[in-house]
Image 1 (cartoon, rainbow, N blue to C red):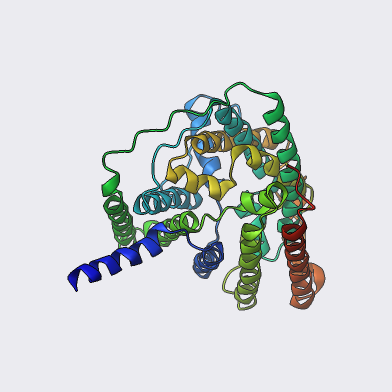
Image 2: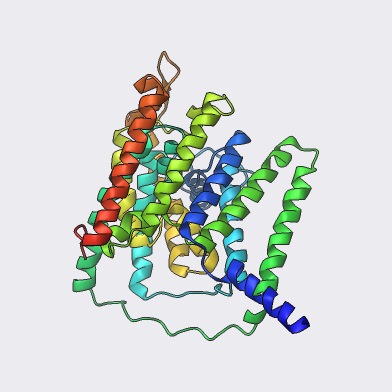
Length: 408
């Protein structure tokens, strides 16, 4: 009886923490976490936190004054997006340890070059679009902004071009393609599940301490710690990655990740609309002033970059937590390029915000656009958004059956 009970617990553990979750389950949980943030008056973004890390780096190497980066930067532990990025990585580390998938994962030397190139393009693209695949694509769509659709079109085109370029490099470049030796299994691997549980407990205790703090700012950050931890855990377990959603239909005709993201958007758009209509959160807080030039152009540059980097912004973070060294390179250059290009763009006044008579922010690359205002209400907004989602789903489903859109 005792042995059967233990074996049953072991099977339950394997099913929950080792076997991969369905991406559809991951998509639903991801939306629930984002809605939790929105109810608290917050939203999910990644690029702003990475840019802050790049700002700190540029100050450290003496480029801060040249790029007109403000000298008194916020602490990475207190900056909202930076803190969530950090805890997202920790959540992914915990999930990877509990599934015994954590380890230093090396790549061929050329892949590190592609990580640097891809990360740089992602930083430039996110600067122009006002966000990455989360803050420039997914979150604006949950906030009923056409900026998300414009960036999605750019991401789609960039993914196609990126795949074609990557295919060309595979056919013409031989240097640095030799796979590194497989690392010897870590002697502590059998203890990884325990380490993962302890990490979750430690971050949970951290959040509890901040929630009980007298400092209002620390107390308000507790929800971000928990949201980031949960997001990293969910994304790793379900392997959710926006790059895969745009890449795989053209690479292998596989469309499961695309359909998971479509499901997430269908749920998120409805949930967001209910929050906005009940005035729980102002939709404009997460709408970048980038529609349509910045969103489309930035999406194209970002989409090309994410193919070479091997992941989107959120996908890069949870893969960093899993131990992929190439993604650490990509993340470094993403942060540095985002900070550097933003400084250059500010010199050109390309991204300098201004306000019109309706108190809507705009820049030289676009404007804050909110579909219910543009279309006169939620009826046409729903019709447009779900019409695009239906077309996307039908295209993905058709491609799964025919492989008509593959480029490899």
